[in-house]
Image 1 (cartoon, rainbow, N blue to C red):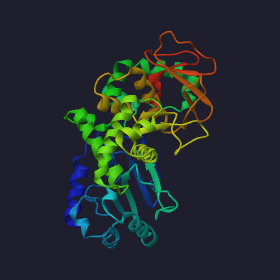
Image 2: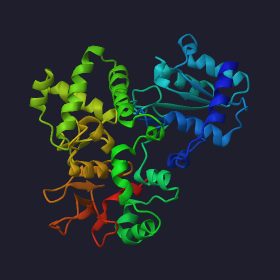
Image 3: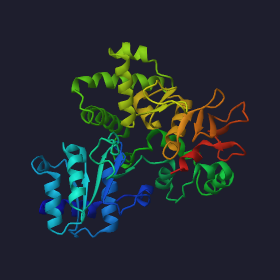
Image 4: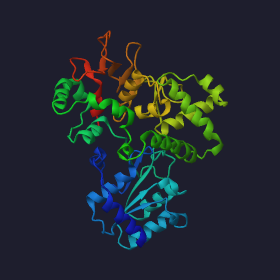
Length: 392
């Protein structure tokens, strides 16, 4: 255990993050079992270590970060380790990569039931269904989702300015004043195209090729978050990789399930299941009418964020696809996104209709709000598209 303490201390002392994530203030850190989910590459490990750095001295042995990638946990169970840790005075155990341990959910449930003096905070894949009623952790764990950077967070990193985030209602009612205030400090349109290309995932800050890093991350999502966690055989990987590529070429569009079934040589039902796995892994978003959901075919399928469009298509990325993908991605965190009527692209929380445009020769429909690209400030129901990146 002493080597784990040394690793914890080293990681805390050498962490240097340029941005504090909003989720840090949304979590109730008093709960005894906290799960932090998120797609691969969004910074879950750094987030966990940042929490330790903010709240505890590096040499305080009441608090410990462990990564279940460590081979030690091939022979040491979580519950036995947690018991040993608390017997030595441990109070907070932070567990990273929890899904690498086969019986992690049962062991965490055991710890929750038997060690009331121990708090456990763990990270896991976005695929994990922590609150499923058949899960050992149902009614025990409080879970949160860590997302990639919002456009607001990206702007803070690139400009050094600090900006508040706004609710959708704030933006609808006061967007002209909000945009004017932001634009008095920075030029959002000067940064938006770079954000769409590489701003969602924190590893753009690393001195490595972003596109290659993202492709590697996407393949890891398929291999681990789709295949391994869903207990699928490795032989299915080529089909799922091909499906994701075919979907990316047409997104946003209504997927032709019969054609996709023919292309990857599997059944229509299997194609729909694969699409659901891709959604759970935060690789695609599915758009449905307000009264429909999976397993029905979506009205439209989007890639989960604009960076993925560049990674899969490489060239000829459609600008309207980028606009719509950006809007869906930024709004989706706290609001329900559905398809609207034939005159409305997106219906938010069942009451706000939105169309997405580029500011050129739009035929405005009075029943819709417009998220418009290419403008710094708006008027009335015409709102700058970039401003929806300030929702979190």
